[in-house]
Image 1: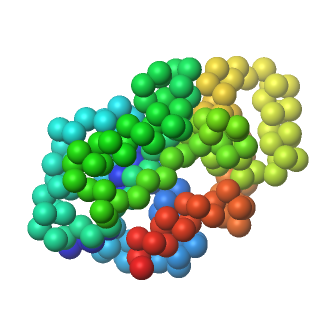
Image 2: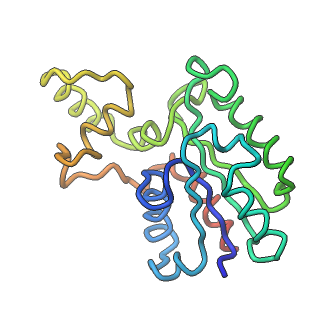
Length: 200
């Protein structure tokens, strides 16, 4: 049985969050695909608001595994987003406060930790996984990307999400063979430490 649970936005197979975490587990901790499958249960929570519903199905399953002594450690990974778009759950502080309240309500606080995805370069810690990934690119690379998108007339309606999807995440990705994963960047340090603690 899997002793580690990682809850993230999106589905548990193809989400950007799950892909990033699996790449970090392999590249930073040196775990194999088999080891990850044996030890880690990924819970795709869907949209962000599902994290704040105590009756959400993954929570029921997780609580049962915790009660049976199967799950020993839990990591919640959630986007900060922006308070301008959601006065209750948007923004780093609101997300942190509401999620900690849910974790306590579920009785999982003793074995849980939280990582909130955001752009570390913003003063108010806004953003999401795409913002986080773009924050680890060099200023030269980002300058090239932005100039290219502007020159080609791409509309960037959702900011970093739009930039990320146009450059790295579409079927006709413009950035191959480049990668948004610069795991040596200091912005990864906190997340790396959270992941490392799951296996200690």
